[in-house]
Image (cartoon, rainbow, N blue to C red; front, top):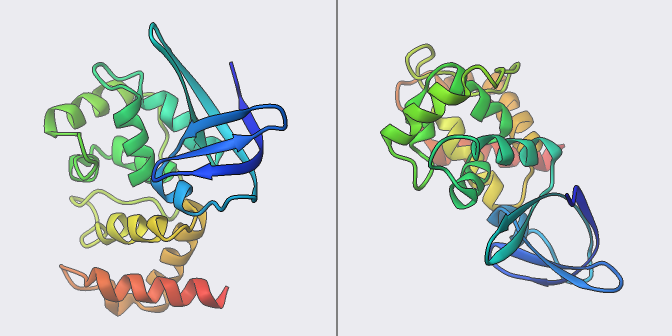
Length: 204
């Protein structure tokens, strides 16, 4: 198994990067937010998962080890392959995913492209005993804490701009503490919240 790859960015695409390891160029599929943040010539280190099929060997890469572990975990669910698993990693941070599973928040899971209610229910059933919701910053169930769904949309927006899930979570926590009035309403304005988190990141 190839646990990681290190080298220099030789080429990028919308959902992949080619890494020059010194004696070969290796194509690695990765979340779009990671791919768009890379530039040719930059050093790169990615945690990887190798998917072997009869007709192909495909390497998937992630900036964080927890994302790679999440990618592997999602594929243990019946009927879910690497394409949807990659979409889950692209849409949700490991903390958010774990909390969505443990709180049975199907709305969060079905926000991922390719996952319907049946698939989300199957994920909860098969993974609930395998994940552990972590601390602050995780998305709470819409049934337990009103108005927290904004974190999914804002987190996705920050990811598309190249921020890591850890940076996004810290910024959203900061906004939740400094501007509680923005999230006190039943339907928070995602645009205002995204601007507030970006201001928080600019100050950090």
